Image (cartoon, rainbow, N blue to C red; front, side, top):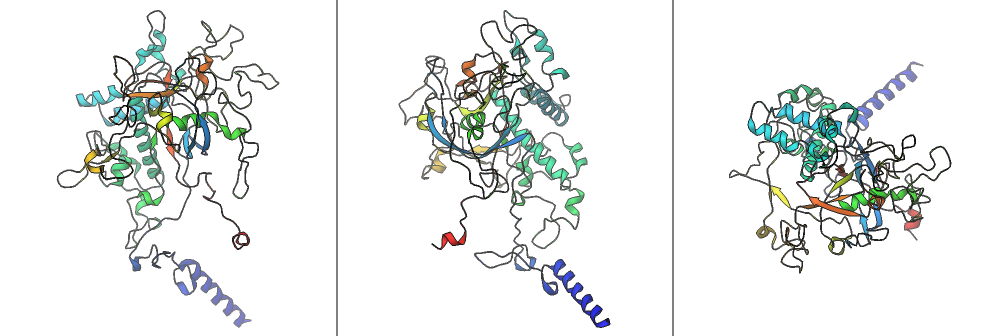
Length: 517
């Protein structure tokens, strides 16, 4: 009996050593490189650190949009005779987009942060920074309409907290996306314990967290308890806890940004709802079929504007728009869309991707620079017009710097630097093949056209638009420094990993018996 107990004790000890060390007799088992055979994460073999492959987390406010091919452009008669949205097939890579439009309460959070970090009472330049970010509430005014209550209260009154922010130019929306990227990543690092929460109280002027300045080591964050703990999974090559997080660790998210026109239009249709049998989990193949063409974002009544299902909601409008001249909401006791101006950002049905108000409520800025014939020139995968290729600014010492707002200084790539490249030869390609020296097109802005390199596309109808503009294929434009009471915005984010989503693979993996045929 004693011998048996002794054997059990030895077995348990060996098992414990195996669990702690990763192998029998306490010898740790390491992942190895397929190309060199060297151990990963082994301080005795160079200390090259790699994180385990992980799925991208969905950022705050976002929903996943599985990419695919679709026909971009007009879906009904071109009654405006613009001929600027000729149908053509494109492929949109998977991405994330905001579930709702950015609301007043979200944008006020942005203004609050700016006021806290850039004290307007301390410096005149700080006042200019905050003024430049403030929405233009005067967009509500009209010479022959009484809209002063909206001018005074729409942005700040709590009754409008969840209504879409308007009066924001394309440039302001772009800056909001940059700010949001930094706050989300800063929040992730604080919640994981790599940055001390009390450190944000000392952020003033250019000494504030941005994702790029942190990753480049230009912003020195106060380490949190999780960073200095022995349980910290991040290690230096010497095997000690690492306080600085790198992008390779998989903790930080890609930047928020404005969606590209093709992305916005694709997300608006929610076409996955028109797939009769979509693949919902790994190993289960879906149909490569879209059952019917949609005119609007909803899939139940594909070319109508009202709820078609039997029930108490049958006949209700599916979007917030203007039915006709002088009719923004219907009659008392039976208001059709129940909104005279804007409506809360989570009103009406979400579409197949779970996105709200892609038709009606407010039109939305997208990233693209407007050209009437972009669809004839742009690539058929991830098409976009508006690229300006940038690089890090380096001072005389070869070091990166931050500007007065804390952002890392970037400069445009010069034509001389890229003239021998095969894939592009210019730093600014906004007018590539449409307005540059290689094209036959020219734009006399202010004389023969209102199109310029600062003309940005906005999509979707608004509370003050007729039904024609509710179709995602329609497109309009406005200068990037202008704003309107009918235009808001939402953000997007790139997808890293499988295009089918988390817990899914990329590519087709056949069983061994099929490979050996």
